[in-house]
Image 1: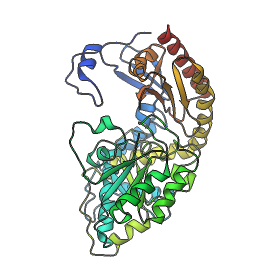
Image 2: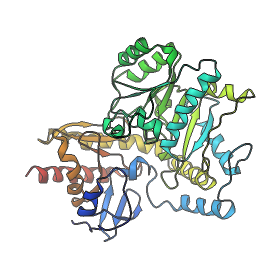
Image 3: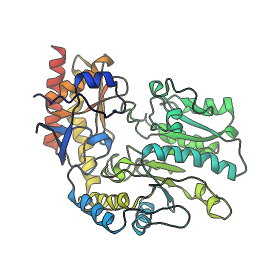
Image 4: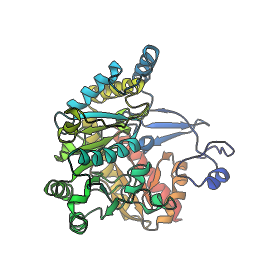
Amino acid sequence: MTTPQHTSSAFWHGFADMHTVESGGRFVVARGEGARIWDTAGTEYLDGTAGLWFTNVGHGRTAIADAVARQLSTLAHYSTFGDVVPDVTLELADRLAAIAPVADSKIFFTSGGSDSIDTAAKLARRYWHQMGKPGKTVVVGRQKAYHGMHVAGTALSGLPLNRENYGELMTDARTVAWDEGKALLELIEKEGADTIAAFFAEPIIGAGGVYLPPEGYLHEVRQICRDHDILFVADEVVTGFGRIGGAWFASSKLGLEPDMMCTAKGLTSGYVPMGAVFVAPRVAEPFYEGGAWWRHGYTYGGHAGAAAAAMANLDIIENEDLLTHASRLEATLHRHLSPLASHDLVSEVRSGMGVVAAVQFADPSYAMPFVKTLRREGVSARAAGNGAIQFSPAFVMTDEQVEQMAASMARALDATAS
């Protein structure tokens, strides 16, 4: 199987060496349906990543497109600053609050995941100022973690390459080990709880390479935050809206009760950009008591067309019981990908929690070129972390398609080894 080569273009790709892109060609996707995509030559591929973790309900959902079209022809958008809000945005906020992991949460809309992280970082610091503790400004992330690419998210990143050559974006951002609660405790003991505003944690580390939390780790760090009066922020941009399997959110499934929860991707299944920060009553209350302005917001936060897409997306998840299908897919991914760990080129397969998996190369340099090798076998996936191939398919992918995807992966590994 070959893919068409598209070289010269004004388009500048994110996370790319543009010299390599211009000389080696682009993979141009033309359409999608369910868990499949087609390039401009009409070649079909299994979409192993659901776009970029986001197409939870699959491609080609006309119900979402129709809902957006109806909304745009009625009211495309309006400001959500001050006391103004589109009716559909108000409806979506209440619907999200009803499935929030913490009862009576408030919903602050953003334009995407990076916006949601920056919003939570700013709100954490603003909250402590409102509570009479302005010295609590430090935000803490974990090694391997990815929290988007805005200023706060970049500063919080546990991926050193994502921070390189930007200078020091935030002097009060820290990074601790991703898998040991004692690392957070040591930081608290060193710098003092009275300086730390919030701890950010992905329930499953996503773009950093798909790392599942060690047994008990999330509950341990959650309790540490409670004990030291530090806000716990769950970054569920990847795991939210069903990708954890069997529940809307990892925070709900695991009983984490976050002070804030950042979401995006699966909120609209990527059909329209949108994000949302779920704010627990503890954090929201000081701003609802009167006299506390929070000067923050986005022109397109709560966009009416995006809200319509989210409402239709949530309808599909509920009506087709896709949370249950996600649990099925979690097990199927684990069953078919785990045997690849025995391949000579592979050091580990990480799977078994949520609709995510990673096949780790023993030699990380193999990962980037392998993506093109895998395309020739009919699967679109991507390199993530330090030499892993990421899988995070749509919840509508069938067991047969997972088996086909794993078989393609095995053939591509053999081709690479030969």
